[in-house]
Length: 91
Image (tube, rainbow, N blue to C red):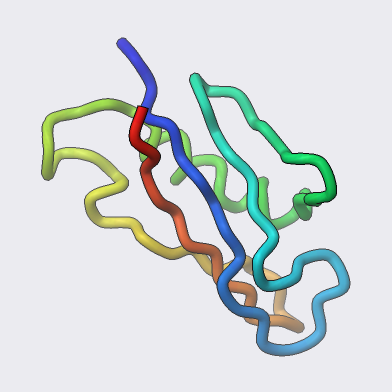
């Protein structure tokens, strides 16, 4: 089974967050986390997303995968509303 490649991008931060900024992004390629130079990833946000990202990476039939119902993710930080966009990349 192959894995779908994903790009995860912070699209909005409402409130006080010192770790994530709009425009920050990272990739999941072949079930590996790739963080481009100059980018950072908040461990708390990443850990909250991992179960959903694992499901979204699975290559399933169209309409049968987590990515088909999941487009955004909100970090569970109670002090800031941080929104991430999750999108599939063309392989």
